[in-house]
Every structure is written in structure tokens, then in C-alpha cells.
Length: 159
Image 1 (cartoon, rainbow, N blue to C red):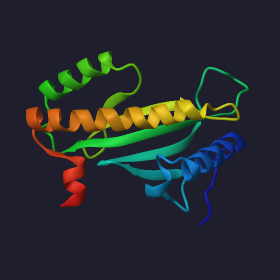
Image 2 (cartoon, rainbow, N blue to C red):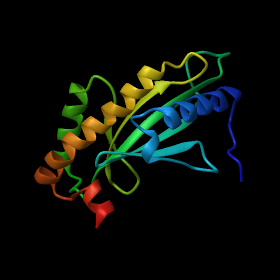
Image 3 (tube, one colour):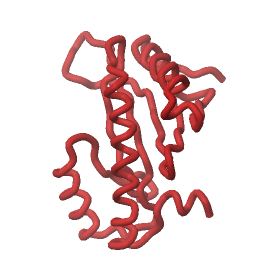
Image 4 (cartoon, one colour):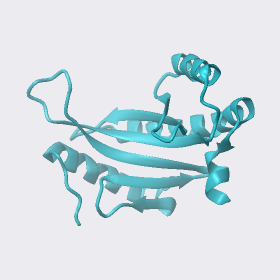
């Protein structure tokens, strides 16, 4: 089944992201594109990053057709989800220049950052977004696993 896009801007953004990732020396060797959804996986060092091209349906501009690109990495799996971890993640979020920690439906600790897509999407911003997610996930996986239990995501993938 081919990829279905919610808008022409989402399709355009997907094409720009695909072209960039397939030609970028930093990412092309470990890139996996999905055939049926607008998503890519990249293994950068020991960090797995999911890059999604999403429609931005509810936004402040009434007549604009917008899309975003979100880079996400799982930081830990099975950490104890309690008030101490939540306080830690919220405190660290305040320190972040871009991106934020959050939990997914399975209570895995994730870190994600987004950039605005579209015709004028800055590819350096996209690269910075992806590398920022890599850096934060790789830095915080040890800290969170040691303080709050669980496994680093990379340990779970390689086991």
C-alpha cells in the first residue's frame, strides 16, 4: 500500500526529508524507509531515531497547510514511573533548548523534537533536530536507567 498523505505540504515535506536522508553522509548508511507510512528509522551510533513527517492540522493559521517533522528516540524501557521520575523529566525539560522528554503508551521514556516542514524547511535545522535527539537520548539513557531503573533502549534492542 503506498503512503497516504493528508496534504500536499506533507507529501512535499516527506520528499524533502527522504531526499536529504538518502544523500546525507551522516544518515544514509543506516536509513530505513517505510513503504506505507511517512516514517524513517535511523541508527546513529547506538541510538535509534524515528523520523516522522506529520500533518499539522490544528495550528494558529487558519488558511495554511502545514506539516512537521518529528524526530523521536526511546531513551529507556521499564523505568519506574513515579513522581521522582516525573519530577526529573519535567525539570530536565525546562533545561532543554529544543525538544522534550515524554512517555509513550507503554510508559517508555522518549525524547522528541520537531521542526516545521514545507517548501522552505531548513535542512540544517532538520539535521540539528535529529542530532540533538541522538545526543540527548545517548546522554540521558544511562542517567535515567541508573536512577530510576529499567533498561537503556539500545540494551533492549541488542538482547
